[in-house]
Length: 404
Image (tube, rainbow, N blue to C red):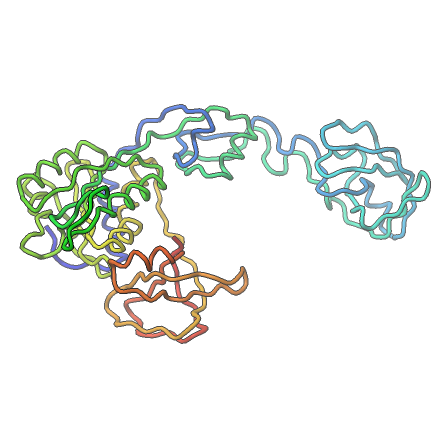
């Protein structure tokens, strides 16, 4: 058992290395496409035909030969009209044009489309007041994906863009990896079920529900276990039950107090613990270990600490169990709305609000009362990430953020 505190990067690297040694690729199953969202693709998918399957107009306008509009204005004879959803019946020759709609197939002989905004009709002719180069506004057949080309590789997590692509290439059923199961075990005599009225010294079991939501968002199947009391034998029995799932997530009981029993119970069951502390806040007392090939994550009991350590560390295990080889964190940068200072040594992940627009992203820390302040994190849409190597930032400076 290692007791040395690791940095954020060291902890993620160690967890990834440990998982590489034991986690097997899960078995695939074939599901209807409408049930595939959030799952990890277990097959390579190739284009069943050229995409687009014809030269496709990207604009409403007139399909022409670029040579005919090289010196605008140009008067051309209009042969007819082609709409989306019908084949082209025309062949464009010198001095000719075809009126065309967005998505329609380009006629033979045409190599570009002049947008309708630069045209005016005179009888059976069109006057085009702007020239365009060959290829402009006319997407060549097969330019997006030639027939037989790889469009999605196995290991990709399926979200709405990937679902749309699978639908476009005719995958009405798709092979995905089995959803991993994650047992969730909250610990502590102070924790009661959410349908109970707590005593003044008790709290409701919010962590089990936040973790279940995080597990489901990452494509896993959450299994909430009964609350473990501060008694070693009962904690061991519930951990043993949790180890029947693919991943065990424990909440609470991982600090240094005399009633924090999780590490002892894990050791009694032969769990090889490799991490006990990480130099972050919230979430410093974090435990990671392996029970054979089963990952075990002991998360701090304070609610925001639980949320943060799941996203930073436990998600690595869940993604790997789901068949996803990589689990990058989507850090971005935004400018601080006001000065910010913290005590270095720990990397801090603090609730914050990201605002602004695409060229002026701004972030404002949310006032909070520590890692139990659920009202604060419920207002946040990101975590502000304060480096362990730096003490302060001025308003207007860029700082990393981790979107929720």
